[in-house]
Length: 559
Image (cartoon, rainbow, N blue to C red; front, top):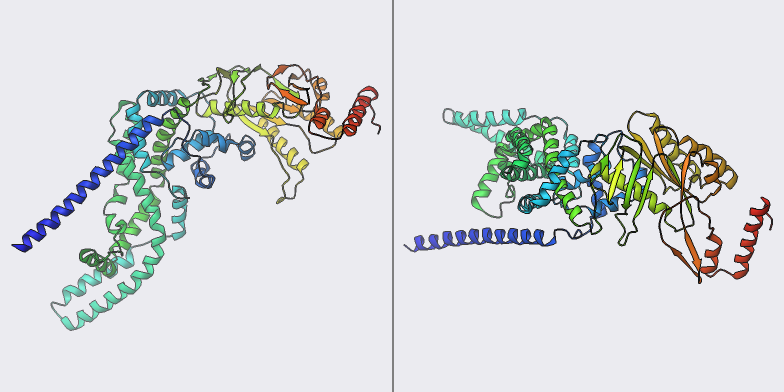
């Protein structure tokens, strides 16, 4: 009777612990749901660790296209920062897909489904939170992408269960044979058991590093299962496709517990787990399952990729809606046209806390002049970034956006290539050449941003070469925005470029910028005046101004 009471207490304790665990899990989930509702429309809670960009880019790298944003343009525009501002994704797949979207601006006007989904998630908060709760269970807390894991599996080469199955077959034969001729068959049984024990630990050491790959895939499939339980007509097609993909992976998951169990070779003293471990050692059933799962992964890599794409796209669409809701200065839905005119009204830069809005309408190239720090480079970046956002997340930080579809290139924040041995000038002309080459290829019109053309060489050659290169950028398939300090270019290129400028006024020993784009070339030259404001000797400032004025009058320099 005492044993029955003791056993009942143990069972009751285990049931209580299980129930309390489930209640705590439900409470934590509800708290997370409440938090999601509370923070909707706010800035992201934390910035993405830059180390994560090592894996966030993997989906893009596996699906790169010829019209993708290249590394020079991405870095010129500080697009990592732009990405971080809109990273409301909770799954690793979502983070990778959002990055892929930004690096792959659409070249056809087929954003209807994206816009429909984003608007739907913004309107239906419960569905959005249901998905986000599932996504957080699929978060990537490591520094590797699932594509890293899949590539890592390739290191194993070919795998076969022939040796394991042959040994197991001989094990069964020898065990049965013991009933007929114990002496000879027992020796055979003993030899096979010793062989399996010795080879088990050798093979186990080889496969253990790869189990994290399978664990990642299992977590992905478990999340996909939960998503498919959501019944909403808006996601019917995605869930149908996801269900079919899950069924494709059924053989991979079946019986996976024998390999993926957390107690495998880590029984912690549990008699049952110890017994199962001995069965694994003697029969190699976990090694056999590993090889089977490995072959299934190799066979269904496209299926896994498709699952990542579906889950990542849904998570990214929700993130786009969250981003839109957080934009205090508003946004607009872009309009794409077949005409060559670019028109953006009251656009602003996504990375500025208190942005200054600017507008522009143009059909041909734009030449922008003005003093340092007046806003030229920021304006170029603002136009390029909003064009990328228009063609990727279908969201523009402006009151109105109307333009053709572009391929976007920049040549702005260049530097010497110390590894390749190229000087700044060589790096610069190579960067410009890649844009000219792109314009020769078929595709959408190229929109390019160039900051300070050929700054890496002397004045005379810079103006001469810049004039001819920028004239080359008036090719029918290019629309060029260029910022320059060389006022001479405004006159030399006035028939090919629209002239705009930013002004800065120096007064009361201070400089004031309104950061508003104005028509026409710049008239004021403030660089020398800035020397005085920053405390340079008065004689240096006055002497420099005298030299500059004399050159403008005579066309020659004198000290």
